[in-house]
Image (cartoon, rainbow over all chains, first blue to last red):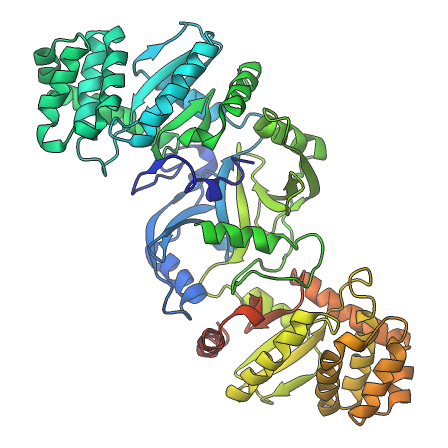
Length: 294
Length: 299
């Protein structure tokens, strides 16, 4: 239900959406979508005009047109009336579209994401050969990510057979999030144990960090976590660090992350932790452990 | 997004059971089912496995699969399913991929209403308005339905305000379980229409006006009485209404509606564009819509 009603849920979830939500299949090279001829911006505009043009109050902005992953179906993502993000899954051959949300569906609905997420190389804790992995895409400046952390900590404590991986996904709307991601990335490489302390204290001090003083504050927090602040700061300025963070963002986008926090439990996406109460979340983890390879 | 999602739910709420209750303010919605493309349909069991894989973690979640059929869209399967006994939703699944789109099928393109317009050429109900119209407004209506009563003056005003438009009335009586005398009224009205176009519209207005005082048991008496009131030969209309070919004609109109995915009344097609909840749309907006469709006549 939560998945099916994703469209309704997204705005209700404790979740910060990126201003440029991504298509699940934006960069797909799979054979299934290879034959899809995408409509042009002009064609989509004509169609929208034909449907909504009678009402001058209706406005739209075409955000992207990409392959949906299903043969013959284009994913047209539109901002309607400057407030509603709407997917039109357009089938040009029959002049029709499905207005709705694409969701995983089938006997192995989360396998593709699970496969892609094997590339997740962020700081991790838990067993080396886990039953399943929980991967979080997070933004250190995002209040919902801060709020989600205790829940995630509780989950990993309740399921010692599960591995937790943290992936940086700083949103462009957060002025110091990228810098914090760079520091965090360096922290995890310098001292994996100290990384978690750094993460917790950054979340804790979100309110006292600002873009202008971000370096200074992050260095203080690094020192507080037992890290070598000078080294971390130097590392954070390296292009290779920026590349690692960008790679993490790209990984998130490739599995349809549109905002933070988004966690993947065994490949199943839960934006904003699905808005689930803890007992439901626990049942879900247990269910995914039972379906580890499915 | 919330409004749109709510719309989707509201529109789908009548997908299975025809209903005259319609609160969705929509001017674009699901379009007719065309020729289904050949696609290997998944079984009920396969759909159940997929649903279980998604929702099985929550013992509080239940689902009912209503229908599995080829979608109008090539290669897609249209699964109608209800979660937790809520209004059914359409899951358009692509059996070759691990994805489905949950939502509502809508016309979309440069000339998206052409398929409906083409089918509506088969509409032969009574008309009023322009003899050679720029566009046609076709209403599928049920004489026992209160929302149809509410729609009548709005449609009448539209054809007055737009003399280049023709209004056509198609009988779409909902099942007797919902509207016990609707079919009978449709048969009487059908006969009235064959006697006199002018008499037909007066007759329909009178029936709407008196909806509250008609009951299944006395429907024949009531319907004859109103026929007389509007100047029709009541006995002739009653005899005609009892003919098998009258019933067949009403059924033909029902089938035309069904072929256009009409699942509630009133459903209005303006130049082929499906408009639901016409009574809830501000009149000025409706006028803009009709003008827009006149400007796009044949497109």
